[in-house]
Image (cartoon, rainbow, N blue to C red; front, side):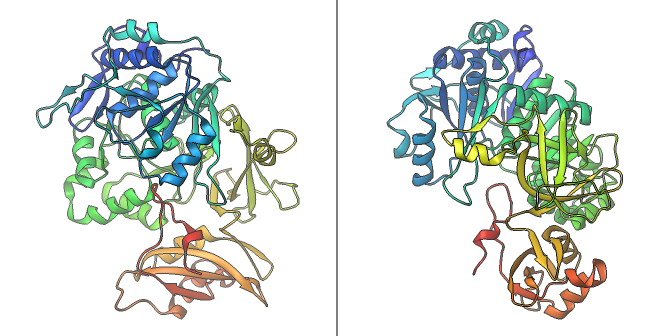
Length: 503
């Protein structure tokens, strides 16, 4: 297989590769640092990476991949029980961390290798380097070549643990060919080149921030500027300072939409970006429209998950239609399937089916879980995503939710929660909304809206919200019950956790 990161081994380069806050690495510096890590972990099999949003995390993962090992990114916010499960399940040989990182007790039994990075700095910050038993080195591209192993495309690159909403997290084993296939397909769809500079503030223990947000620019030979912690001022500064692309999740774009009316510099910066991309959950139509009105630019969406990496995307030269995730990426087969397993061929924008996908972008297995792996695939190799969607006449995919939590069967209709949530968010009295179904003796399931009002002292009436939805969608899609909350439960990626809603 060709190298995942050709720019690292083509020779020393002064081109910027990574910047986290004030600290940065050129390609030559990254090649040296990652090559040193690779030399320390070669033959380790699986390597845990303590993964805060830092330069050391990025160097550690690239070094593990150069060595032909598999990285197991660890969420620093995980509790002891979850960490203990991940470590027991993945059995890493060692853990990589920044020299100043304080690791929890559950990791202290593992051999630790500190990732010491000799970073360049901007005028407004220091390098933050630490001491200890470390992997550090020089030599530019030669360092990367010396550390690089010859590895086949089916060899594991990452073991990324799912959220575990229905049990302990499962480790999705992602092979090297899946990373290459997804990033090359996105390069085709988004015209992604070495000239692009990506800015984002996403976590690095998840495929969005790590695979797309760090490995993506490095595969292209471009650069990434990580904000550390997302804020609209950072977005404005980086896009005004030469960045061309912004990746975010809906929570981030919602904050951008809220800030735009009072921040003309932010509007100007977004207007100058080549590509604005949202993912990990559906971006509400209301936020799409507010950003477009203020900047003249449309946010594009894509659809993927841990086990599949990316499946679809709105192309850079395609129509950025609010509420859709575009067309299947090159090399990805996608179909919608009925409850009985029959393929749904309708392109009518209404018929709901479960998404199944097949292609080189797929994971190989759930680690140590042959039962779960077998259940996830059909006999002919299609992966059951558990997501439900409709397809428009031109083939665009519109996700309407998760089959387990967002497909509501009410009065003989199959209804996706997502379109009702979008309709509710168009009401000026609604700040946040989630929709679920609950048992109903007459309808089978009734539609329940969970609403965070814009003004808690004067929430919109239940009947007003029901009529609002009925006028925009159809009478059978109106909520039968409205429950008011101060906030919706969300995970680290900003996704609403419907299973955590009060009983």
